[in-house]
Image (cartoon, rainbow, N blue to C red; front, side, top):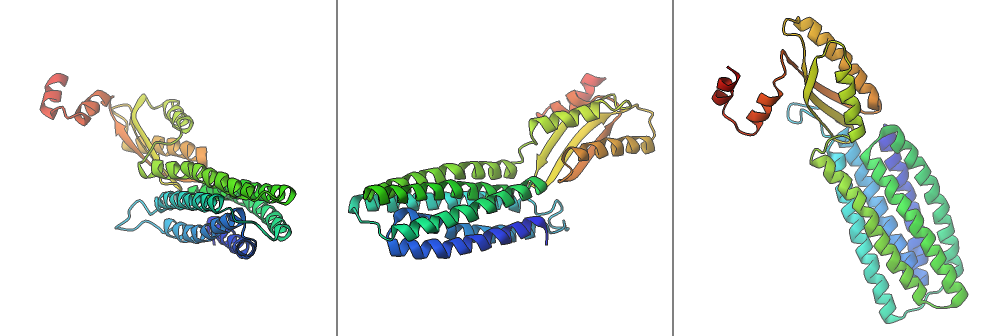
Amino acid sequence: MSAQKKATVVSSSVATLLLIVKLFIGIASGSVAVLASAIDSLLDMAISLFNFFAIKKSEEKANEFYQYGKGKIQAIAAVIEGTVITISGLYIIYVAIEKLIAGSSTSLLTPSIIAMLFSIVVTYLLVVYLMRIAKETDSIVIKADALHYKTDLWSNAAVLLALVLVYLTELDFIDALFGLGIGVYIIYSAYEIIVEGIRILLDRSLDGEIVAEIGEIISNHPEITSYHWLKTRTDGSTNFVEFHMVLRPNMLLLEAHRIADEVEDKIMTLESNKKWIITPHFDPYDDEEMNNALLHGKPLETLKKEVD
């Protein structure tokens, strides 16, 4: 089992444990904040299970129908996860407002406080683990999971603070106010997850720093005259790179292939935890202007006349 899949199994198991503890205490005590945290744990469990199958699918080898693999399933999972988190945040806000209007009370404060302390410790350990796996694998799904549980950590701390304040002041509306704040924070945290997933689905280029380093690797090769049309994208686990490199017109194909291999090997070291698909194009002269003109719909005959 890969590190990514193992991480989703661990996170879903932890979410299940926290769900049982919080749901029991939340229903028994009538605390909106604890119940909101229980609902969040329920969604955590569902999302982590979904992430497991998403990662499993994304790791399948390319075939004749999916010739670039299924890596973008991870981005789809991230968008779905962010959307579900947003919905859970909206529901928490609704429950908090309902309690503010109804003015219901909170009981069993001591067991609730103990349950939230337990939840904070367990969630912290899970976040540390997920952040380590995310750093090792650079998986967008594990990054999203780590970010999600990190927001859970803060929301659990807020719930604990709310319960302590209710215990000290006997003002039950504090619980609802904190529940409202947690709902808003959860929605805010989901935005980053959704945006990152959408960027991958829309084939956004790699980070500017990596693109610049790729350009330096190509241009610094002593046998490459120049390069153009450098294009990059990622599906979350595999980086795709295309570029045109200008070589001597009389160069043997064997030499050109050797140069391409040398460039590709150096590019792959930029992110060694990712797979790379690099497609170089050999040019005997710089045809960037002609290619750009064709891209913008200029007729080929017109271009030939201009070149002649």
